[in-house]
Every structure is written in C-alpha cells, then in structure tokens.
Image 1: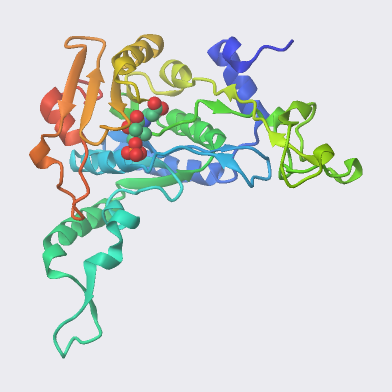
Image 2: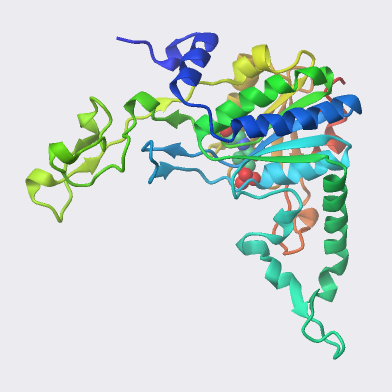
Length: 358
Ligand code: PAZ
C-alpha cells in the first residue's frame, strides 16, 4: 500500500503534494508582483513581513460546488498588517479572497458597514453630497491617511488565495522569492489552514450526486475507486437510489518544516499561530509545535478569547508569556466591536521579540 503524505519525509511529501496539483492560475502573476515588490524593498533595505490571513477551503469536487471552510474572518491578519506597517515594515498580505483587509476592515462586513459611517450633507449648498458623519471624521481621516501612505509608497501587496492547495503554492513561492531579504524577512502565519483535505487523486471531478445516476451518464461524480463515499439513505428517493455522503479526509502535510528548513531565507524569523478551543491544550500544543518545527515564536490563542488574549511561547526565557488587552481597551474600534491583541501590544510587552534579527 502506498505511503500517505504524513508517513513521508517532509521533502518527499512536498514533492508528492505539489506534483499532484496544477499550480494556481494566478501564481505566475502573483510571483511577478511579489518579485517586483521584494526587489524594491531589498533595494531600500526595508524589512518585509509575509502575513497570512483568513481560512483556507477544502474542495470536495475538482469542479467545485461544495467545500469545507472554517471560521476565520482574517481579523488577526488584517489588524496585525496595519501594526507592521506602522512599525516600518513592508507587508505582503496573503489572504483568503474576500476576507478582511488592512484599513478597509474598519468599514467592511456587517459589523462595520461603510454606509453606517455616511450621511447626506446637511447644508443647502451641499445638499445631495455624501459626507462622513461628524463623529467619525477623525478616525476615518486617520485610517484614510495611513491607507494612502501605504499605497503611495508601495508598502502593501495584497495577494488572495481560496483553497488550501492555493495557499500552499503561494506560501512556497513567496518564501523562496523572499530569499534576497535574508534577515530582513519575517513570516507571520496567522491564516487558519485546514488540517484535513481530499487528495486530488481521490476527488470527484464533477458535482457529487445525491441520488444514483445511470452509469453511462456519470462522467466523474465519484472519485475513482471511492464507492465508499456513497452509502446509506436519503428519504425522498427509493431505497435503491438513496445516498449518504461519507467524506474521507487525509491530513494536510505540515509544511512549516519545509518553510523553516528549506523555503525561507537564512536568518529570517518565523512566527506561527496555534488555535485551540480547550484551554488545557493550548500551551502544550503551542510548545509542541515550537519544538517540532524549531522556529522562533508560536502565538497561541483560544477561539473564545482570541481578540484580547494570546500566549507567546518562545524557545528561550520567559518561554511562556500571556498578553492581554485590558478590559478598558477592548472597545476601541469605531463600530464598538472589540479590538484585538495587535502587534503593538505584543511589542510593548515583549520587547524586541518580533524583530527578525534581534
Ligand atoms: O481570522 P480571525 O481573526 O477570526 O482568527 C485568527 C486566528 C484564530 C485564525 C489566528 O489567530 C490563528 O490562530 N491562526 C492559526 C490557526 C491554526 O492553524 O491553529
């Protein structure tokens, strides 16, 4: 029986995984944009951080109708990117398409709809003109200025992904392209990357059917040899045609090893995140990840408290450090939505730990 990816060495798993998928259509374009961006900042001797953000999808079909997703909205990534920009970094923002973006996050999605910040001008001369409401003028001007500054100075590169395979291809390419940055490169991996997936070889080509279709019409709604995906019942159909969908997922190979040992530039710093829901597991899992991949910092967070509490797990003393946004500072965003632990908090409390060459 062939070995699964998790049974292979990291280098073997890399070769098998990346040969199984065609590279994403946008990859050459993203690589060209990233190359130009990195060249510019190498020239300026500026630090560049790759921030990953948002969740990855796991498609159930190659021509994808259905997919598995996760909760991440990209708040951590988009917020942290703003703090990195404020600290003088250039930011490559590798994000889930349509998730929150630096700066525009203040005015997007249902909790912060931009329309709630607008009004019609009150004076007769300006009647009909749309203006920002008085109470939001200052905050919006500040955000706008920072956004403009980042844009005009080419400090922020936005690159979207959707599936877990796209994310892996993009991460590998970007890390290799960042090699000329050496110790000026930082990886800040806040994306919620799926732990399980369906390998391409077992994936249905077409939309998975909920009832039996005649064999001569079925052009690939089942993955080859995977009849066990379909068993069981569906109440509207005659017994013989009823189906239940049983999904058989493999573990996604952990490429953090390859990032640390192979793809990323020597001297760069790698920060990963660990999300848990069980408080009893968070420190243990974060520490295990740090030991397994030998990188620089794991930031652990719990789903329920992630907006105001994280734990820094480091290879050197103090090994474990909790960082909390005080209660009085938890409602700082314009809409009153609770702000979250950002890079500034982390730096204040943790000195230079986020400086790549510190
Ligand atoms: O995107 P968001 O702000 O809603 O959530 C952030 C987060 C919890 C996805 C991030 O802080 C994190 O822990 N990312 C890594 C998740 C993991 O793979 O364990």
